[in-house]
Structures are given as C-alpha cells and as structure tokens.
Image 1 (cartoon, rainbow, N blue to C red):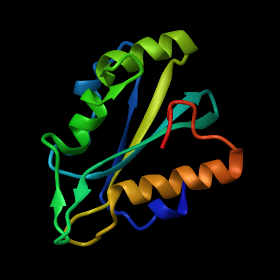
Image 2 (image 1 turned 90 degrees about the vertical axis):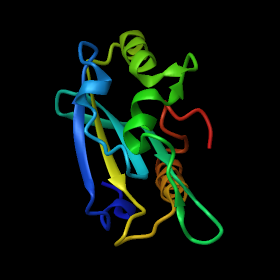
Image 3 (image 1 turned 60 degrees about the horizontal axis):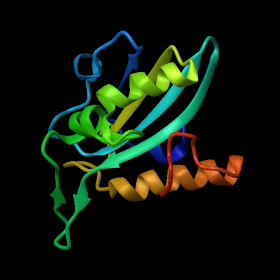
Amino acid sequence: MYKELEKFDQTNSFSFSIEDSLEAVCNAPESGSGVFVVYEIDGENKELIMVGSTGTVQNDGTLKIKNGGLHDKIVNGHQFAKTGRKYSWPAQMKIENISLLEVVWYETFNETVKAIPTAVEGQILQDFLDEKGTLPRWNVAF
C-alpha cells in the first residue's frame, strides 16, 4: 500500500473478473469522491496497473461531486476505446490475458479528511514513476 493512502479510513475493495458485471460488483459509494487503484492479480502476484480519481475541490474549499461519485467513475469512466469501463475493462483483460482485477477505493475528501482527489492520485503516480520509471500501464498520461 502507498503511504498516502493510509490516512483514509473510508475504504473498501472488490474483485472483478471478465465474467462479472462491473456495475454489480463495484461497492464504491455513489456519493463519495476520492481515488481508486487497480491491481492485476496473478496467483500470488499483485501488480498496480492503474490509478484514477474523481471529485473537484472548488475555490471555497467545497467539493464538487460528479453524479454517481466513485461508483460511476469506476463503472462508466471512459478508458481504452472511449467507452465505459464496464465494457472496456473486460475487453482489455481479454487482450492482456488478465483473469482477475482487485479494485481498492478510498474516499479522500469528506467530513473528517480533506485531501484533493487528483493530488492524491498524482502523488501515487509520482511514487510509482520514481520507483519504476513509468506510469502504471493502464494510465496513459497524467
């Protein structure tokens, strides 16, 4: 786990296989904002392949939550073929011969903690870049 994520207690995870409905297995809140990290699970190996976030902090310090929050961003966010992840993730998993993903989400901005989602996402990506020299393979750019 990345140390930036340790301070967030509103967190959970779910597994996703090609046969699953992403909409059905995703347990992220529809009203929450924050970050999500995606791992490829291959037996005992766990590899970070993507980091994403949702929610924008406004000038007055309030949070603008997109409709559907973290849940919608994970399920319907565009990736790869510019379609919702509920379609693009299974297709990409098939291409890369990935049988299982683990998605871990964190609410980073709520009543008790005020961390800007994109800042947390950026720090995780920076740490990954420092360690590996690249971004996670499903992150095209940041």
